[in-house]
Structures are given as C-alpha cells and as structure tokens.
Image 1 (cartoon, helix red, strand yellow):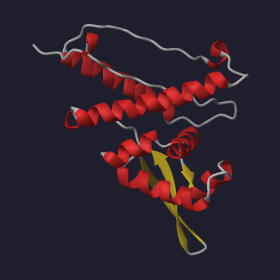
Image 2: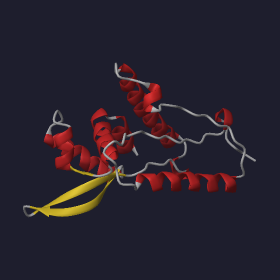
Image 3: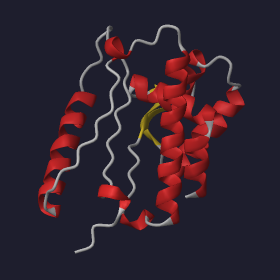
Length: 175
C-alpha cells in the first residue's frame, strides 16, 4: 500500500502513467522517446515499481535483438472494501493530489479553454438500492471499457475521467 501511495503522488510516475494512458500501451523505448528529460534508469526504476505495485501491467512481450521488450498498460485502480480506513484515505488523497496537479497545470496554460477541452465536474446525489447502484456502475464501466477499446483516431484527445462514489455528507450508509 505504501508503494502505491508513493507512486500515485510521484510526479515522474504520474507523467509516465499519463503517457501510457494517453497511448493505451507503450514500451519503455516509447516512453523514453516522449519523456527525454527523464533519465533512462529512472524510467526503468519507476516502471519496475509501478508493475510491482499493480499500477501498470505487461500486456505484450516481444524479442528485440535477443532481449524481451515489454509493452505496458495502465491498470484501473479501485478502492475496495479491503482498502478501508487509513489505506483508503491515503489512496483517495493521492488521487486528489494527482487531479489537483493536472488541473493546476491545465489552468496555468495560456491555451486553456474549458469549453473547447470539455472540462467539467458533475455532482449527482442519487438514491438507489445497493443492487441498483451496482448495476448502474456495471453499465458505466461497460461504456467506458467499450470506448477505451476503440482504435485511436489521429485527432483524438486524451481526457481523464474520474468517477467517485461517496455517501452523502461523507457519512456512512448504515441501515
């Protein structure tokens, strides 16, 4: 858990994650090509840590000049019942720090255009049974998975999509 928190709050790891997410999958060579300011050894160390922590995964392996070259993809990170309490709060904090950093960088840009870039945040308070809520989440994830699996057109833009569920007022949903 501590490694996951360090990874999610590390700016270099986040840059690597964002590049992989943007391209859906990448090799270390491809990552190095788009992040020339990050030393090769640092990229390899971060990739090793992220793979061990389960943030990224190897999706393909090819032989290149007798060496195995791995292709990596970002795994979705979920907070589950086993991450309750302090660990869950650490993951949420790391996620918010990452979102804050991305927003901060976006709004620092002279080219920021909220309407063009379709930046938005929604907050819905809905009342559903646990079963109906689980069914709704399955549908939402199926839609995201369907679009995430599409071929990427040349004019595609990368967008971060966050979906969070929290009991109203931050309270627990005890019967």
